[in-house]
Image (cartoon, rainbow, N blue to C red):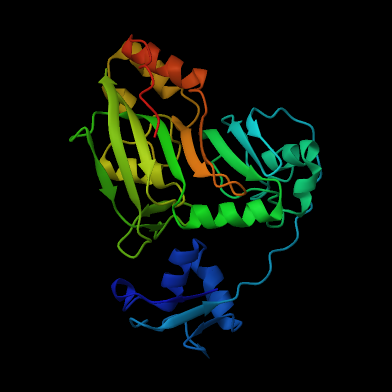
Length: 318
């Protein structure tokens, strides 16, 4: 892959820039540079090489180690399927594909059991998967059944042609009630497994709207203009309104709330985040498709137990 350095990235170190752009650890990029897999203007460079506007960076990462994924039976909540795509409602707690010690029981394994043709679609260990959701996030997910659909959908996600709306329950009430969070995201400088708002991160934009607020929490709708790792979770923390239940970016705000509502907030076992709605063009027919994953019962119950109010009716879709 090759890209041109824009003016706003001028002056960045080569290793930091590549790590942020490709969302990989900097020490891994440094190994690639040492092996001659990263070049600037056609020449090998050092990790500390400062970049200039107009430079061309070429990166040829080594091929990932082939991960063999075997079919495993498992429940799939299918919202739509045809010869090219499958649209799913992923439950919270289900990992999308193997990685980081998880070698079995993922969505990828279940997909191969039901759709064996996906074995040759997409990257190693990720049959048909063109985007992902965190393990703790529930909601709508699109996968490809054919190489052509995979290529078209991958381009659509990369060029931001896909509309994605999320629902989340966060602490506090944002002010203003609706707005845009525009803050670059990259690896946390000390805790490398985490993401953070950092000046040299990749551009990230999240539009948010408050649907309801009561009892120290808010129900928010988030519209992603970019798709950075942990973007909503990081941006809401940056805004000062972290998600309830987030084990990494959350805060124990429940301690400052009335005792009757502390337990459901303290004990909520996952980030209170749901991939709610998605809209995209069918990779074969170009028809505009819209899908909605029903709000899961755990989010409804959390809202109702804490606020004493019914979960708000769904507003119109995108």
